[in-house]
Image 1 (cartoon, rainbow, N blue to C red):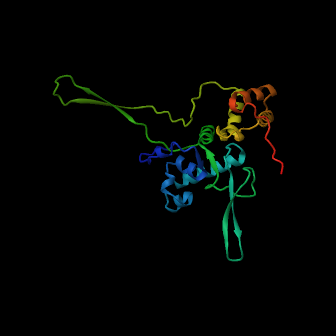
Image 2 (tube, one colour):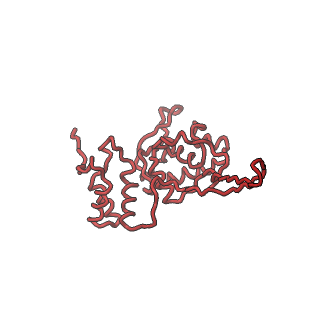
Image 3 (tube, rainbow, N blue to C red):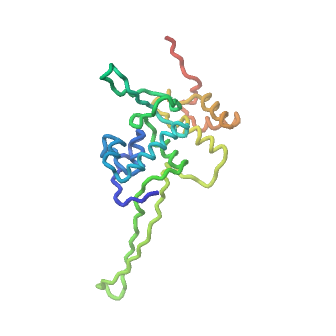
Length: 241
């Protein structure tokens, strides 16, 4: 991954839990979106040294959404609406991620921090990092308390470059793969304050069965991931008009 000496301070983005595709791509490229209100187009216009990296990552995110590898919170497209021969405007409207009739909007489509980190790890996305800090040990010569002789040992400190929120251990099995699959597909967009965002048990188990899980394994995965507050969510309520 690229090591950047003059990486800008991005700490003010740590509390943000949802990003547009444009914001996510710029942050992974070490570019502060607040410095470029025009998004990726402005980054390219001013020829930022990493504008190509930002654009490449943004295309990768769009491709991941199309393939179902990265699940957006909301997926928007953009189209030109004409009033007459001379007047019109750009309109954003929500679409299904798999709908290839329209181009996904990088400015309006939203993805969560957690789902972005999972995608970065699984796809081994190259993103910029600061150089590892150096540890400096000073050892006095010992000949005299007033001696100016010093031995300076500079040792690089190993920095964990993994972007994951949770540690990975040296173990893998089909059950864990199905857990990760269910998190990416359903639970990454769950809002604990809005129970309606929770998937139904049938949605989760049917999806995992299609992926090759047995009925017992699919139900076990659903039970493990489902918060107690939504354990009784079985099917959506249909409002009759």
